[in-house]
Image (cartoon, rainbow, N blue to C red):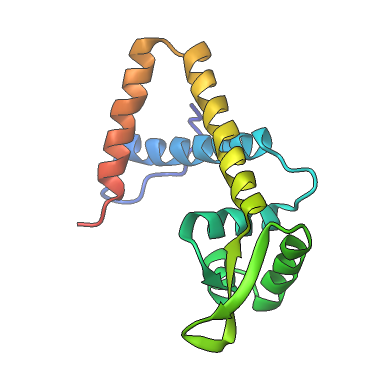
Length: 154
């Protein structure tokens, strides 16, 4: 990979610094490529992200979605209006607080999220099948197990 990684901080090996840098670069490229695969020309990246978030976590308030996405509530409101107009989400009164509304996926929204996920999963599986040997795939699985262990909280 790239040897232009930043100088290691004190007490951190060159290999750990390089691994961190290279992983971040590859992860960013992989994330962009996966997003391109199921690119929804009729939805903005913000709309796709909000739709995916609702699909993953279920019913949520607009403010919870804004917080999760790191955007202003007004921005999320505009995103949700567009998704509502496309009949991908619905808003219903929160049974615990009638002043709030819960955002959920419609059947069309669920089909869209599931279809996009399947397209991305199939692209990635096909890339592994066509570009990697069985041994390389096992190496990736071993590396993923290490990354999973590294990212778990103690």
